[in-house]
Image (cartoon, rainbow, N blue to C red; front, side, top):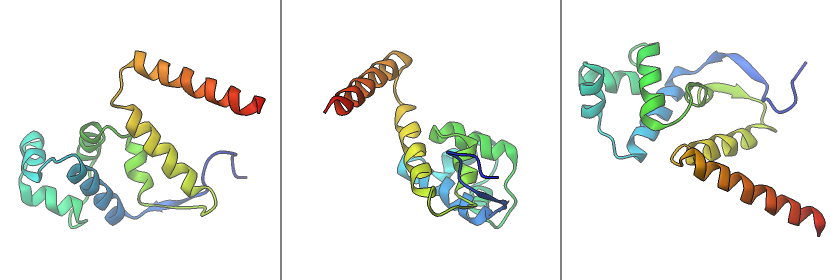
Length: 126
């Protein structure tokens, strides 16, 4: 039975897609493979191999990218999962909203939430 609000997922993960997502997020933030390699205490070749699925991804690297790119581990792994096509676009939007919010303070997030609630109330009254 499919739970409401959650995309139907296959248990298999395409790690090539996960690596590409990690690379995409790293590049979008202007972070080099050299910085990642230095932070992880490894080589640029290793980082390249992880991002291009030529070596196995481990939990340490996965959590490092998660923290580096301000996304959840689930966001990274979801890039490699097969999803129900109907709910997948909503999941992507939700993830992008969470990523955008990660750059705000808790106080700023509360203000944004209040603005969204006010906007929804106004919409309902119309």
